[in-house]
Length: 635
Image (spheres, rainbow, N blue to C red):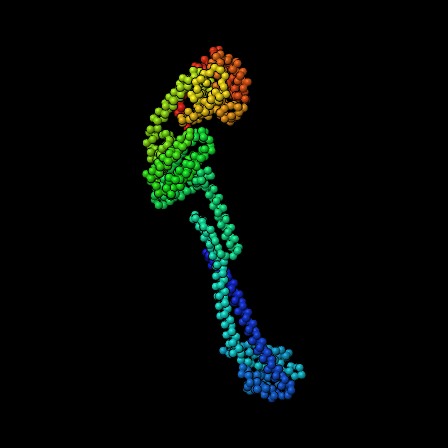
């Protein structure tokens, strides 16, 4: 039962009980003290009477004189009911004098024996109807010896009435004082303790219910005020920690942890209100390429900028979160497909509009939409929106696709992939032919590097998929020479420092050219870093050892070997295979990866043992590069 009472009620009941108990004890004690004082007064009065009787008897030794005293006292004292004198008479104690003459000669009751025998004084209180009687028995003294007993009856009804009236008023006053104290204590405790604590409790409940928090300001005791200050600081610390736990530190918007909880709340509300809600999955197009071109610091600025664009062009009731990497999600309560698509198109358009400010890579965004419960259930909502977003990217990016559109796009998927693959192959062939027009050595060189690299990669136990990527990279590794002037490419003398710096730019130029083809994305690092060296003296970034991708290290050995064993503008007579192998060995650990050089030499030696014909001719009869299937290389 006590658990159901409020704190305020418990405190008031506690203090009320203490006050009532204290006042009750005080009233009982005062009543007892007053009653005891009245009794002592009676005793004193009775002793005075018996002393007077004993004095008269001592002087006269006459029973008649005692009777006279009895009659006098009875006449003067209105509250004296009766006086009896008990002495020994013919071997028994009897009444020999009394204000009631009819009692003279009566035997003394046994109750007087202690007084008659040993001189003890006896006092008792009795009540006869409404009369309160005090009975006192005192010894009759003669020469200091007890020779009888004086029995006195007093009517103390008036005194008892006074006592009862006094007790009644004391009780009334005590109750009034208790009530006043309880009211005062209730007011003081309520103001200084209960109300501040209730205010703190309401603040805690409001936080629990997710309401906006306002500072708790109390006018209470110093200790309670200090508790309020500590409570405010604790709440702000907790809010700060919570905000940090649900906020993406880069963009300042909510993170994926908040997204999961908030999505569940919005779905629950959608069920309860029987309203649709929309989930938008947004992914920045070509973000990896942008990071590679501009650097991660610029990529972070782009993420922050796009989050601001999204926030600016969604509705106030919508929530945007960073889902991870370059992905954002937008939760839209009470939203149908038409409204969601309108907002998504506005966001897509504004991102593309702002994205053209990028120097090298235009920034666009692909968006997938799923509607609950129209398109899917709660468990598959995120999957459907994500699937729609990836469909948008596969259709060329920078577009919006709804979950309802997926069925239509599936039927077109096979045809699109076939056309894309043909276009990719045509692009590769066009690029190689363009380089061939500028440098007559480049075409055969790229093809042979591709074959060397593919054979070497296969002998190292790499997967067929990885072998294909490295072979394609070998075919395209020098495509950046399109941007190098012809007089530098075909110069027979030693290049100047300026010309050499321009020649060193061809891996970056090739990377930028090929980066526009999504399906070649995984081969790009091999093209970009095929002139890096394990000792860190390569270009364009000076990577060392395992920092250089494996495919690029393979290309580096294949590229150098074919360059040494073929005609070049600066060297008409090619080196022999033995001399080229010696040069590869000389560059182990500095210019080339040691293990790859050893494996390549092993491959060359095995080919030479198996066939006396020229190694180059053997590679020339390998399978043409144009037969490679690039579908499985897509991201």
